[in-house]
Length: 299
Figure 1 (cartoon, rainbow, N blue to C red):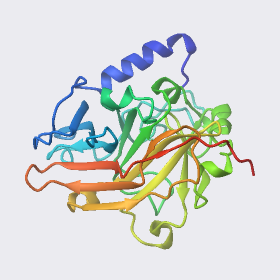
Figure 2 (figure 1 turned 135 degrees about the horizontal axis):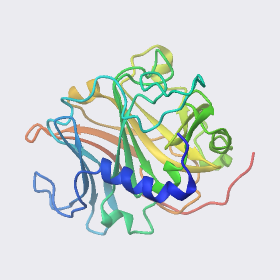
Figure 3 (figure 1 turned 180 degrees about the horizontal axis):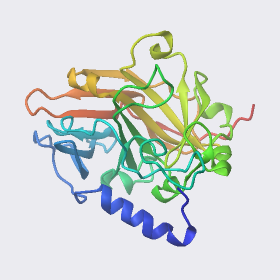
Figure 4 (figure 1 turned 120 degrees about the horizontal axis):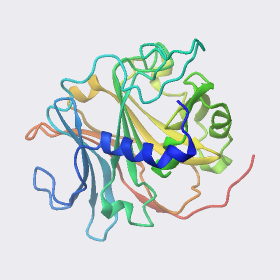
């Protein structure tokens, strides 16, 4: 879906207003935890999803994440698309929503201002995608799941990555090539590989091919890094609806890269939890450490 420069500001503004159903607010969580700061809220399923942050007494981030209300996992679309990212793949002059649009539903959810305004925290907003039929590759990620991207790249830059004829997820060709530009060797863990998974309004997805889902184990959750134009642009947890409904309370280590290009606090664990008292679910990045920026190392 081509985006013209003259219409970009209007389009992005309309997209944000359409996806965000709450306004930014600061406060405590529903369970009264005083260290939790709430951000934006959006409708999801029969409930809501909100961004949040938690800090220790010294201001170090303890958690950045999203909170699903108890009913947010119910009443989700079981098929179809929000039609935000479509392309006439067969060139017949007609865009068929059933076969020529990404089968997903997206939410733009800014992180709390207490995060976004800090220069020492590189993450500023969340792009949450509900995939009712999953996505590529078939036999691996083709089950209902959420993609939760924590972005370091501005919203306008991400949504400028447009649909087009190139790649398995149909991206504008020049942007498909830009998204696949190699990262400096020290900015990515060696287990994560470029599998050409460039998506519009997202970027490239670098996948850990050592993950259990690539050894014939059912996909439940996995970690992904995002890239565009030779830079790391997002951190991502992918998790199935079924795994969340199993009420997890666990953390998984993040395979951190040797170095980072932008100094700041970075997570070393990804956590999924269910609160038995409130019924809420949280997905969060945790165990933050401060990392100094390193010069790029070329291969």
